[in-house]
Length: 554
Image 1 (spheres, helix red, strand yellow):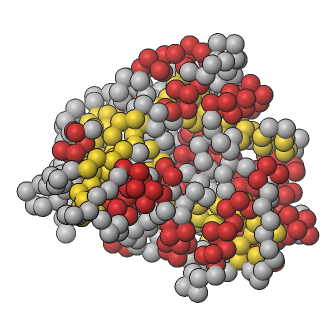
Image 2: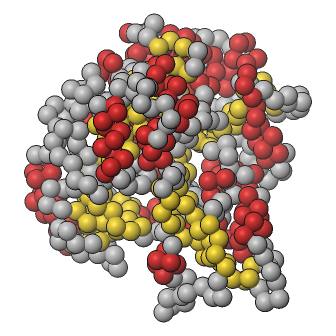
């Protein structure tokens, strides 16, 4: 079948690419090199070249590249000894602690596929993700191990083994049972030799899940090559072509969860390319962030607006020294200009706003460091990336500059597919283009302005929250007749979930009753913070809940 619109896409890109490329910072290439190596190559390279350099810093803990590599090898060999093989799915279920990164590097060494897992998820949420991915092994911090153990005991679950590690501040006793292993015992008994497993650039490294508690979760298939295609671009761009932060001095502040593609790409991935140091923060309160910055002097930080606002308003900020921060990513929600200006005054650094998805290893657009910034924009088209705006109905008609339409993109960072989900894959990947579902406009300089989200996704404190997940939990309550959740602006979280609820005739409910019901089935950040009881849910002409009307009510 002839598809003439594909030629129009090419013509649109060819016309506008020179105009957006002229705004790239000096020493940021228009095209990058992508060596055909697996991710483990880069970690081994730095462990050999800079063995004494700190790889992980957290509080009083300092782990060098040499020691990190030896521990990762031990973890890898311990997993092989338990029967974990190349291509097997292994979930890592922990906050930002050293064991997460060491386990991740171990999986890269043996070609096992990481399933990044939010430890705050409920058992139903975790069960769906593990079943969809076929996860057989869960590496988990002991404080969250009970959920993984309960899932393992479910005869319908694929989970065969749970490996629990302790941290001194949250030690939890775990009774010995079949299929449950102590992380430290396994690691200390294993060999520290490099595993003899051949891993290729095209092998899958990560299944980044985008879904929630209902329907079929979607695992973005990310290969070693896809992931590394962002490592070099992210590091080079954020450091302003390494004029803002020299390559050999990169030290990232890891406050976004590592199970999120944003936290992973802006920390682990950047340091794979630069041989940099990762400063870990498990609980990103303003106090903890300030302590980590002053103690370890990171210079690259991936943040969300709530974190920046928290530091701006910290009672000790006037006497604190946060001037080590130079390149600061900010994503998930727009950042107020006055907040941006104040933080740049405090740090002397530059804030870069960006946009991306799990399907794109975090980035499609970012603001240049030095050349041009436009308030309200999420940045300029990324190197080696093509973006086109098309009509929402057919996705085949190119929309002129500064007019609204759906954003589509292509580049080496685009996922391979959704895991075992051909229908959804075919829906979003068409003829080499990713259909994002986001409504945007792009101006003549290639700056992207997000206007709406076609999928009604709520971005809450950097996490993706899907209204349907919350709606179905609400509908499960015997007193609820109708429900519809939307995202509304929140000064701290960017957005928060607000539930509109119609109570069944003859029943009475309170806001507290709704929230408590949601807490039983949803991760904390998904629980609505606002509830409004209404007589009826407004609907569109075809009978669908009219979320636009509800959002307008705030």
